[in-house]
Image (cartoon, rainbow over all chains, first blue to last red):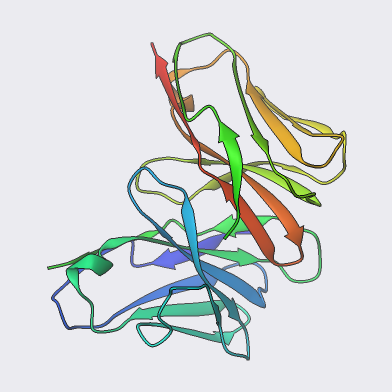
Length: 116
Length: 110
């Protein structure tokens, strides 16, 4: 169990457009999900904590109006990159925390975003 | 957020050799986790440790939760080419606070 599905795996978009990335916990409920950004050869940089039924908590320096997070149900969180620019090109990864126990984080397979 | 000190940054080893990597922190953690990430994919959980002193194995992998709760190591025995990847440690501070090491890139020469 504990499968996290992230979609799409790759997306190319033009500058100025918006892109939505979905993160689903397939076989467990996750009140809390996390969104990360990963630059080449670097570790995971936490962008925000997504909370079902409430506003996301953003890390310092992450623009909440640019990276919109919606955690609409216990199994789905979405990250929308609004008005994308080439500097937003990156690898975005979500993870989900199963409710109710001390279980570890489980990650999605990541989304490679390229903004042209 | 806070980063753990993970070492080494990279390793170049011969197939069949054993590997060891570790993470240290100035903070106490309740849980230590070890992940492997292949290029273009998300990290995959290898081992989870929940108690100080705990030693857990997963096939050729062995990890320990340091007795001070501020460190953990991961050993890989008899490495094979498919062990190539980046290994991350993670420490859990409370329910929803996780901190990640900077990664150890493992290269295995056949």
